[in-house]
Amino acid sequence: MSLNIEIVGVIAAILTTSAFVPQVYKTWKSKSAKELSLTMYLVLFTGILLWFIYGYVIESFAIKLANIITGLLVLILIYFKLKYKK
Image (cartoon, rainbow, N blue to C red; front, side, top):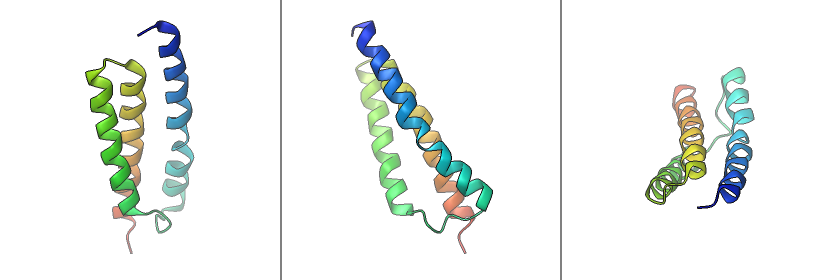
């Protein structure tokens, strides 16, 4: 894979992954996850895991990077959803 297209992938990874940071921060600060859908985040995490496997197989640093970090952020949101369940 060419270096130029991998750079595009890394930039995309940074942008899409950083989109989850405000939700993690908001949930952590408010100690409330009632607006989060557990089903949606479980399905999303499954997709992220499959994307990571795909990135591993095709040896794409950008895909692996994005999905490791996004996966961790989604796991944090799943944890908050279960922790703050009323």
